Image (cartoon, rainbow, N blue to C red; front, side, top):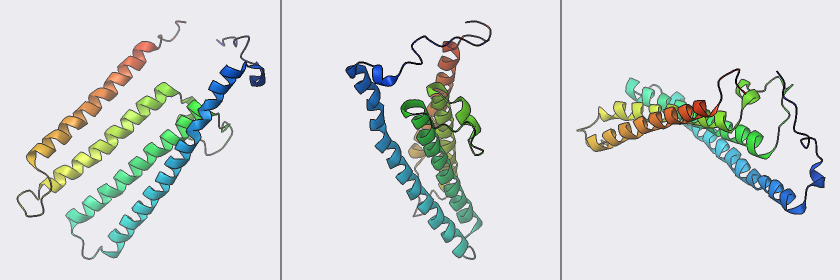
Length: 188
């Protein structure tokens, strides 16, 4: 069932009164923020390549544990990079302007149904994934407790675990609120 568009939905934006037009145009102030995130993405690509080169060049000298920690670091960078892409593309599409990617063969599947609610849930899930990798690295590195170079105390591990659990609870809360705010299928 298709709903009829609001009668003013095809209104020419140039016919808006000056103040609403100015307020609507202010969304473009977010553009430098998204461009800045693209620069941050480039930094993460550089860090990824640097760490990958370290792994490849030093592979004969790297222990299995060190290799695992480096690979977890690489996965962490990839997950943060994915988070950046979701924020850049999804945020721009949701809050600034449509990208008109409907027929582009490389359009990500998730972008076809992105809105602020979907973006919040995807971001929460990405943050949980990143937190999981950090917590796993902490647990692995915690095996070195008692050695002179140990960086994690029991309290630090406990707090990281608590923060991770709070991320999970927050994501569940966001999903529940989103579910409650949407009417069940078939109800308008």
